[in-house]
Image (cartoon, rainbow, N blue to C red):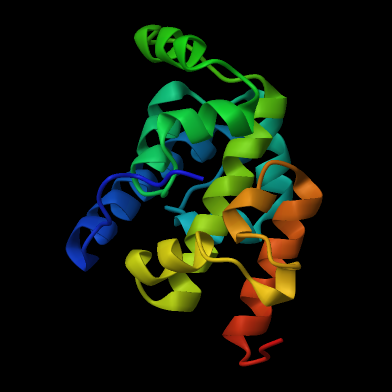
Length: 169
């Protein structure tokens, strides 16, 4: 898995997450009839809100902001979403484009892994390094290689959870 050319510093990471928080807050207000602002972390705790957002489809604008703080390249995103990079470029040029629910779900899964990984490791740099290193606990696979499907994503999340709690394989 090829990673983004740069790794965000602490300030850049916070700016990117704050931008996603702002845009996502506005987006989910209409879905869940929320009167309060919601953070990215809050969003992932509200499973019913996630289901509603998946069914509605994610606007490209929010995907673009999510993409900015993940370690994934355009090629990685195309592979994860089972689309061509040209198709992603076409979507980018359409201001009103919303992803289909199957793609929205995958985008949210990858955003959730990134959000949790940065939380566990304390920095995007450490998380990205772990994501691209073979893991004994994951049968020698790099965690990033397992993110193509939901079962692999669950294995990666479980390993992050073990790391968070100090349980190393």
